[in-house]
Image: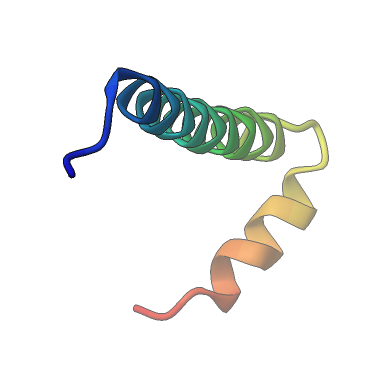
Amino acid sequence: APPGPAALAAALRAYDRERRRSAQRTAFASRTLHRFMSTERTWLRDAAVRLLPG
């Protein structure tokens, strides 16, 4: 038998929860990167950038 409306609602809630969690992780990483790149300790930022390939 096909799943009922309750199963569909539960699946949509789980999907929404995961999307929100992913968006929160992205926002946190973005804020952290911005804070690091705009810091007064430019020597620390420059040292980290020098470690990047390319």
